[in-house]
Image 1 (cartoon, rainbow, N blue to C red):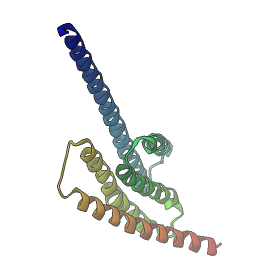
Image 2: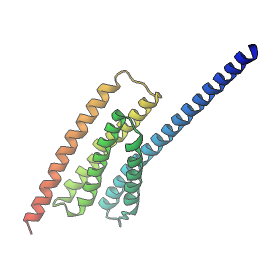
Image 3: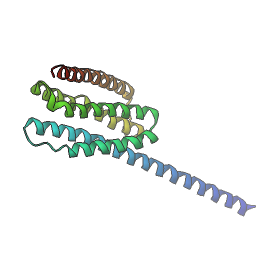
Image 4: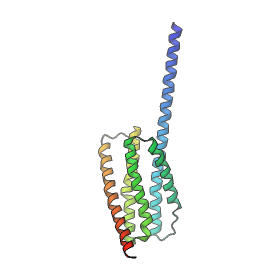
Length: 186
């Protein structure tokens, strides 16, 4: 009887240890995904910003780094769509749209009717809304992992997401107007 109880306790302990190991592996996989997602977002933002600065200085612009970082972000975003919770995915999706607008701004830059204004607008996008979006991603991921728990997180998240939506809508409207103006002048 005693040996049966000892055997049962040993099995229960082994089950708890396996469960703990599975949990730790899942947490590590989540941390790895979050780190890769954060790195890809930062690299994409930096690549776009660097293209803008090089173009403004009149240097030859190699778009390969931007295209590569865009692709790397797309790969990470695809993986994230399958693994993230709804709240975290909401932030990542908003950042994806913000990054897409940054890419569009860079691609449309050479054909802008007023280059000085376009460079200022583009630099403001990368240092303002896009930087804020990448910051929000990092804070959201850290909050979800329990690394950085801020009691005001929800208010901050809502405020930044609202500001991103407003800024994105404004810049998309402006870019559409420029495209229409250019098409009308042909």
